[in-house]
Amino acid sequence: MYGRSGGGAYGRRGGGDLEGGRHNDTNAGILEQQNNERINELSEQVNRLKGLTIDIGNEVSEQNRLLENMGDGFQNAKDMLQGSLVRIGTMLESGGAKHMCYMVGFVVLVIVFLYWVMTHKGTSGA
Image 1 (tube, rainbow, N blue to C red):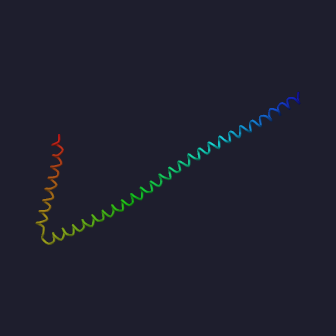
Image 2 (image 1 turned 180 degrees about the horizontal axis):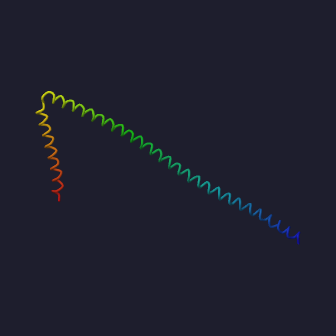
Image 3 (image 1 turned 45 degrees about the horizontal axis):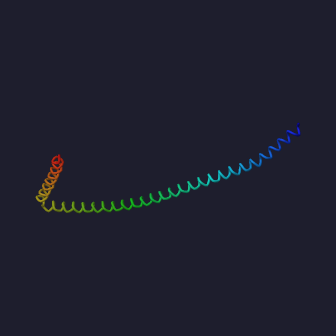
């Protein structure tokens, strides 16, 4: 009885090892295939992120260029306004106050006229 049960256990165990080895090889192959698929997915995601990063970098460069141009435009406008103020100051000092009053009156009339046109334009269409 003792010898038979020991022999039977060894016999089953030996066959189980061969079957278990094949099973482990199959599992290892499946796991390796899954790992390769995940690596490919990660590689695709990295490539998409790389493209996105490049696009963001290009957009930042474009925005910086636009901001520099805008700064130049504001500087030009500032210079023009300063020049105009200097000329107005010179005109006031030289006794051109009468002309300045006419100019201010004209600007006020233009603003009132534009306001009137804008308010009546909205009501005439109704």
